[in-house]
Image 1 (cartoon, rainbow over the protein chains, first blue to last red):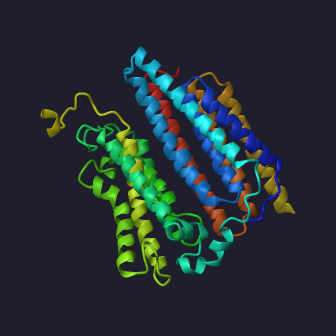
Image 2 (tube, each protein chain N blue to C red):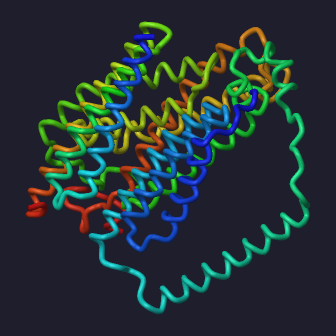
Image 3 (cartoon, each protein chain N blue to C red):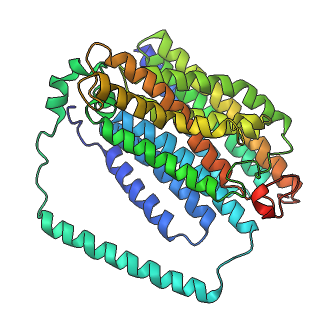
Length: 325
Length: 95
């Protein structure tokens, strides 16, 4: 990418980013901090666009600003209705532990900075290498080629981390499903209308982002985040089945990693080696894998959001066998 | 030439309405009048800015996409401000 000249808008953008970051950390009210975090995410997405990285910008806007802020807003709102659990003593211990960990991290980072030495130009990087061998990847968009072919181990591990995170969130539920979380009972008419109009649009946009990932910015993570927003809207708008509570939930969460591992084993058993995609069919394999990943990522993000809501205490009308033991 | 002049007029008018909506958000005393300021002025401002961009678009498809963005933003802002207003009414907040 040729570097665009730095304009006054870029300077304003950087100033705005720093201001938003500072406000996020230092405003006393949590709800204000969350809104500032949302603003920070939007500005960061614009900054990535200015830096010529539309893929990162899309992911930042959808996941960093959108989904994360929704989770934080939900957490602040639920927290304010919940009695404080940690007692005074516990809070002090937690504060000391946090301060010690932060100090260790700061010293470690300082040592790394000293070790790296003064900033030097990063050099050409791997961009030329990727461009030279793009033909072998099966896709024509370099970012997708790196994520799903040249460095697919990284993506495999990211998907595994996502699965572990959502399993941990589910493990905190009374019966390790979302059955204990009450579905929204009352849907305002206007929200129902909005969902009926927006849900198909979001599904189409997600599908387009998924397919476009082969030739242009887009891909499974962006499509999954958009689809997750659609699923949550549907749940809030009177279709609680959009995020299934138990039976369909786990297969949907696991299908991405399962598909990735299946592809890995198949390439190891039949092909050239672990995740070594043959150029002849790599395009089809990547698109199929990304479709599965989109479903899993969408359901993971939506399930994390739903699991973040408090289960009713005590659970009413929910039979949980573990509880009677 | 005429196209450029119209574009500039539309964009400046859009910015004016955005600024007016923001002033309203900051200066009005309660939730309902703030919502009124933001939704009305910002929707119009966004429409004018997008119309300015659509005049400069290199293809009709791009102009149509900008129109679609405006329609979706109208829908979302109308619904969310309605939800905010009725939510505040439920809790006896607002006025």
